[in-house]
Length: 101
Image (tube, rainbow, N blue to C red; front, side, top):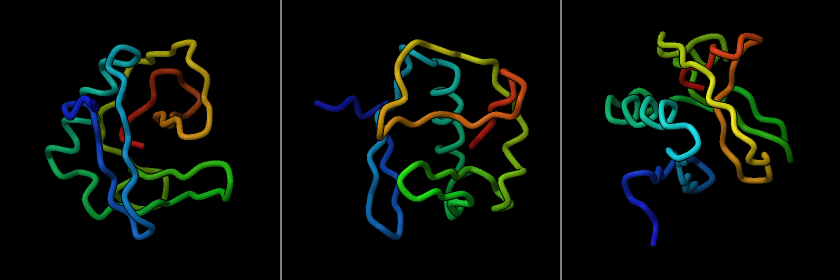
C-alpha cells in the first residue's frame, strides 16, 4: 500500500505521474517539496526542459530553468542508483543549490 503522505500525483497533459517520495533518503528535500506543493507553487508550472528518452525538468516559476522558490537546500546525497523513473532535485555546480526544480 502506498504511503499517501509521501506520494505525489503529478497531473500532466500526457496523463498522471505518480511520484513516491523517499524521506528516508532525503528528509529535507521531501519536506520542502511537500511545503511547496501545499502552497500551490507547482500549479500550472511547465516542463521547461525535456530530453526524449532521458529526462524532464520542471519547477521553475518563470519557465526558463533559471528560477526557483528562493530557498536553497543542503545536499542530501545517497547511494541509491538513478534508474529509469527516479526523481531528483536539480542543482547548479554547488552541492547545496537545489531549490524547487
